Image (cartoon, rainbow, N blue to C red; front, side, top):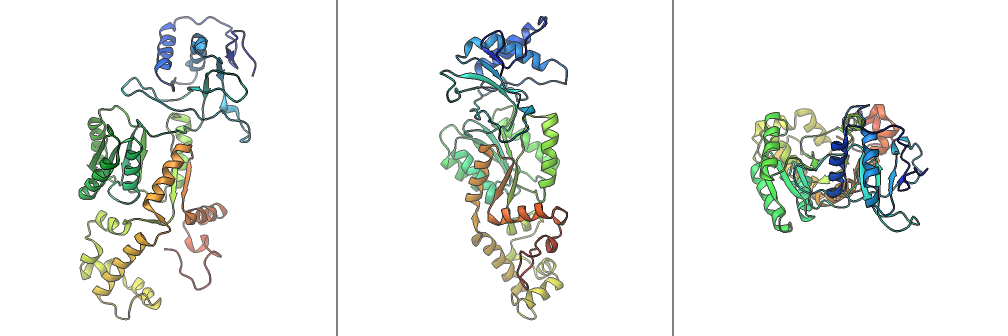
Length: 384
């Protein structure tokens, strides 16, 4: 990069005109930078964000032994080009925090660049070294991956507002997370049906009030989502243009051991599998499915309501206990991916296999017979 005439500025364009009438804005941004390692300048195109950032850089250059550097990563096209190390993010609590657009960090010196920190402007993925001191929201926190995400986040020093459709299981999660959390970490549980907008808005307001905050740092949308990879990928592009301070990651889990069968029944207003009536269990396993299960030797001929209930109970137990990945392991993979700044997080070997199949045959993404053709031996069970 070319050095500017100022000596401590690196890569910034020369100021060809005077900067008049915005001294207050310069002082405000410089003040934020003194108390926060990540500062944002937002506004419509042409409003002068880059010019303001450059003027702030000139004002604060003396604070940094190795000067101030401009890194315009939007122009990088070769993924093999060197990238500056992801800086630590640290925010003081309270309303003075500003979300990011053109991000400016204080980072350690690069190897061979001499002593002292430097100020770097970078636009890219928002990796983080720690969840400590942040506030996270987790949906579906009453069991499975949602419970484990809540517990692991709290144990790592992150306050959590977690919700679930079933208040009793949510209360169990809160008790477990609080027992494992360091002092000062707040974990709250909330009853919420994420399919009901009014309940979601109430959940939002409760979390902000109970955690005395005007923002959350992380949202783990674990409940009530399925088949959302294409939507999330489109959302990434929308956010990149309209809200680049917000990052979204797509989690693609394979078979993870959870109570999803019983939870799905509860979401539909049904009791646990063993308490289903004969009429309910017959509706859950219609005649065509029963015939297939009989042909496969899974159900006896003339299966009774008790046979069907036993089958559902066993299927629910096997799904949870015989999974290749536990809910705790899945939560660890997810949190590691978020920390690393990944936008696609695959959980389990089967998730990677499905991802490869979809990429090879994108038009067959929801035609499972076609999608997995050649992957399942002749006569084998088809995925359901």
